[in-house]
Image 1 (cartoon, helix red, strand yellow):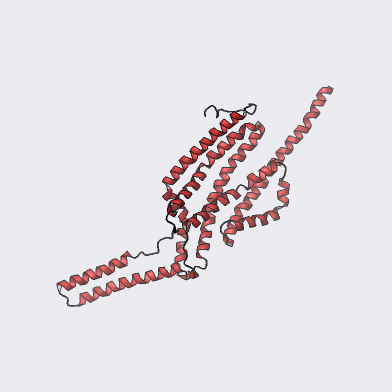
Image 2: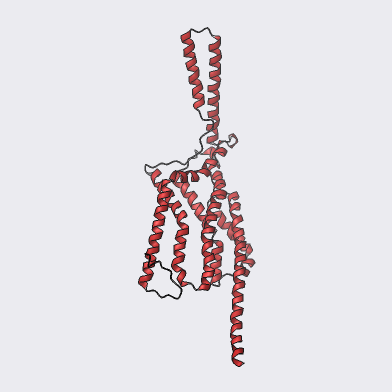
Amino acid sequence: MATALKPIGHEDRLTIVDHLDELRSRLIIAAITLAVAFAVCFWQNGTLITVLNKPLADSTQQSQNESSGGRLSQVSAAQKEVQQGFEASARLFRLLSASADLTPAEARAAEAAIRRVEGAADALPRTIPKRKPITTGVGEPFTVTLTIAAYFALLFSLPVLLYQAYAFVLPAFSPRERRVALPTMLMVPLLFLGGVAFGYWLVLPPAISFLQNFNDQNFDVLLQAKDYYRFELLGMLSTGLVFQLPVGLLALNAVGIVTARQLRASWRYAIVAIAVVAAILPGVDPVTTMILMVPLLLLYLLSILLLTIADRRRGDRGELAAIAPHDGDETEES
């Protein structure tokens, strides 16, 4: 493996067997990285599940709001009434036992009864426990945990996986192409992680809160764990992918399909396309769609800036290439 992963220059010539050996070595490194990350994620699955449950838990407060009229708010109101009834009964029994002429045995029995009522009142939670997704199958807790660990392992291994892919194709690039490819490859994981963080912190909470509490007075809102985690993970994956917009436009610019001038001229169509993309991503409510449109518009503006720089550099290289032959002709004439 060490021989296969030795530094390879652009001028080196390797056989097919050498390329396959290097590919095998890098695939082994990627597999080991994924396996270690998966083991760590499975070990810490409780922490990861708590992180994923947070948007749903935060929606509990809105569900318990009495003005919402939902089933959870009705349960919360009934629970408060039962607790207040127990506390009032305990106070009344204490007053009656104090004013009545009871024998010592009757007084002890009355005190025991009062303590039981007070204990029942204290045993009731002050608020409904924060919501968690439910499981319906025998093996669902195990399979869902495996799925969550696998997704997070892939996320945490992404920098190493991208580096192995980049290192494998790097020898095929000329020095000038490497100067272009390196910043682009660095942008991919940074933009992806930024998209995942944006989706988790700013897109999922309002989307889950809106969708779970919408018209909840007519439904018993129970959320299956498998569906909930799929919604979250696909949502974060989607936002991570759409944040690759500048990289995709740079690639199209490199092959001559898109220019910065075309992007500036098509900004009206771009806004419509961004609105459509934001609408089809998880979270169909208008608020979430508007939240997701903001970074996409900023990324579109960033793409225009990057393509402008790329077009300018390409133009400068073209001018230098056009001037160089004329300089050579003048030297020959002299």
